[in-house]
Image 1 (tube, rainbow, N blue to C red):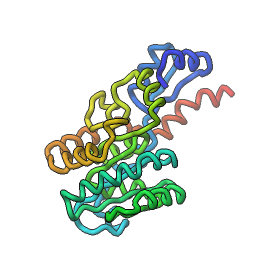
Image 2 (image 1 turned 120 degrees about the vertical axis):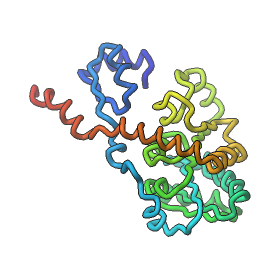
Image 3 (image 1 turned 90 degrees about the vertical axis):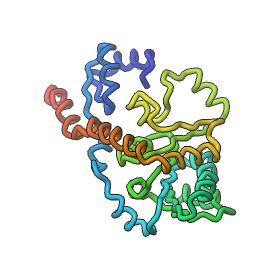
Image 4 (image 1 turned 180 degrees about the vertical axis):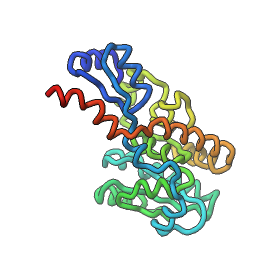
Length: 255
């Protein structure tokens, strides 16, 4: 979205940009495009201190550790990631016999694909339709396909492992065009690898399980990440609706 040619087209087409991430503001300002940072609407909706106990009660989870698996919302993402995450979950379960898993599906069709992927695995997986926010609030660690769900996990202050798989040719083209070393929104916002990213060849059940277990085994690291995500949440929590209305008001009056 921030390539020079795209910035140039935007400059020709728009009178004022409203951006949801703080780092975007300087990009457009440097290009001479009027811009206002309004914050991210999700940061206004998700509480600063999520209620993990209430979410676990809502989902009917037993006491003990919980991992959230979020394979993506599109059916193609579910096809690529559901079995990968479930295989990682099976390996995690070998270390933690009391581990529970919640897997929110974006639709009934996605839930059917997930149930098919889970066949042959003996795992305590709670497959949900919707309720991704409840799943994130309830979990100790999240295993998340790259996308908006990674930002949601960060706003819920959850340690996570980000993963993604695409066809090999697509991955090759994306790497050729990559401007940043990160794909996950939490890492982009932090400008650092604050959470692991396992993509393409590195996205194996063994690697994903290893990274999840590393979070579970390191309380000081988890606590430091919670502080990082809390600061990130505060920076994004700007009452976006009000700021959008304020930025649009001069243009509406002119019309």
